[in-house]
Length: 203
Image (cartoon, rainbow, N blue to C red; front, side):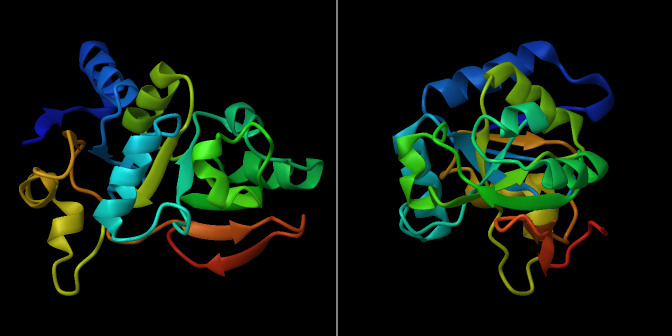
């Protein structure tokens, strides 16, 4: 059964954040709030944890189009190739409800080799996940909580999310009600930004 941890954006509990990070470093899988929908994630340096996330989503790890959450553009630059033009776009939009698809750099761990050509980057405007990634020191693998038709409350209400996923993950973080609309996906893989999914974010 998962642990259910309450955190507040305006007063993130450092001790609880460290417990969460310890779980991630030991291969744990967590569910956490972002500035859009709740997400499932793990430390990108933990191969078995990535396999668990893929199993929860019902996909093969090598074919999964997972994104990563970074604490800032500087961290994103360690794992992706960011041109000056794209950097300006990102600086204007982030932190915020966007996923930027960028060419992957050599710094991306081999556990994500299926995504070596491109990778989605998220820097959410949410202090809870920001504190977790900053304490962890490297990105979180991220994928939205799976939505079932007619059950949107199971993707927005943290107590119901915990009820549904308690046997599949190690920690569910209650950061308040989540959003039901995903991030806007901007493809920058060819250096010319184009929206491939319109979500909350507006360019």
